[in-house]
Length: 215
Image 1 (cartoon, rainbow, N blue to C red):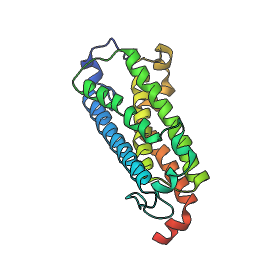
Image 2: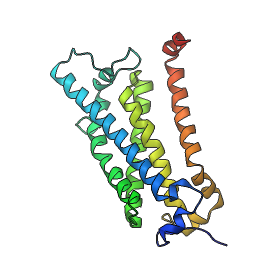
Image 3: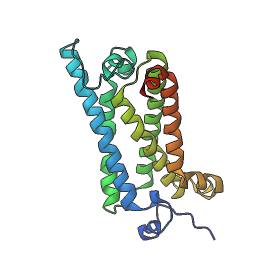
């Protein structure tokens, strides 16, 4: 029997499924919490940026050591890819999933195009995150603490929204009926953790001179 859910299905049906992304309460709460964390991290980084502009010699709260320093990263061109500080993108971008999280938590049934739009936005966000991860860790050679927090919430947000859209049939019935994709979607937490662990491993290896002194 085909148990694939679609956006026209009753919310009560979705709430009885095994995957947490199909249940309004946990999924909505997750979007809200992750968006708030991402927004606050972006806002804090923006505040640090303007503090740096006002006083170039200031030591920022996120300037932890030579290996992890927001101030050092801000001095490079990649910190303003579109001609303005990247963190302003984060401040604006996290508002949308925050609002959708509130609506989902309240039981509002969102149109398919809204969820697909969120998915596209998060896909762009993840692409930007991975680019900045590479530039920060391997090109600049310094990690930005606030940026790392943004990475940590953006990736699982993308994975969970993608999983929800696949399981609800937003990507089409063929994708929703694919057994392999459904298993991967239901294991979105595991995949998110694995993704973040790979990033962590890259950071540890690249900055081993710092981490080796901790043991």
